[in-house]
Image 1 (tube, rainbow, N blue to C red):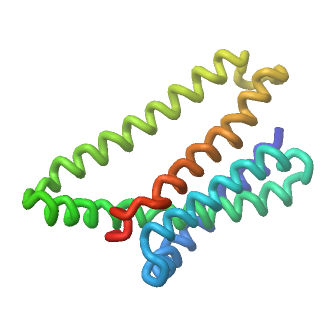
Image 2 (tube, rainbow, N blue to C red; image 1 turned 90 degrees about the horizontal axis):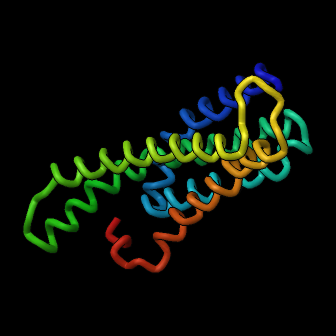
Amino acid sequence: HNEAGTTIALLLLLVVAMVFVPLSVLFSKRFGKVRTYQAAMGVLALSSLTVACFGHLGGPLLVYAIMTAAGIGLGFSYAPPFAMVPDAIELEAHESGKREEGAYYGLWNFAIKLCQAGGAAGSGLILGWSGYVADRSQTASSLGAIQALIGPVPAALFAAAFLDYIGNERHVFL
């Protein structure tokens, strides 16, 4: 309902993310790429759940604070994956004796595009099934779908990314 507030929230998210990308590199040098990425996923999961559960209760200032925290997580999430791909290539080359950079980067880019398209299509389907109609007052069903798509759904995906690295000794190389 507040387009100016939405613009401010998104600007906070993106500006804070830009500031924290270089800081994430410093953090990574001290704690490692995997821990940096885990920190990002943890902050993003908590931010997603917090805005979905409490954003409507606290007003714009609370949403701005949550979006600022999410910006930290977003900034920390940019560099580690791109820094870990070469490490994974080196580990595989060390273990197999084969150099397959092209296959890795081709698969990496394909996976990114597939996930982006799947996320957009899945969100559209869920909103359509819930009765969402643009530029109209929303039903309880469509508001519930919107809340799920900004809260528990991304939080679960971020948590899965966080948990993927726990207990996997191969990630120690990274």
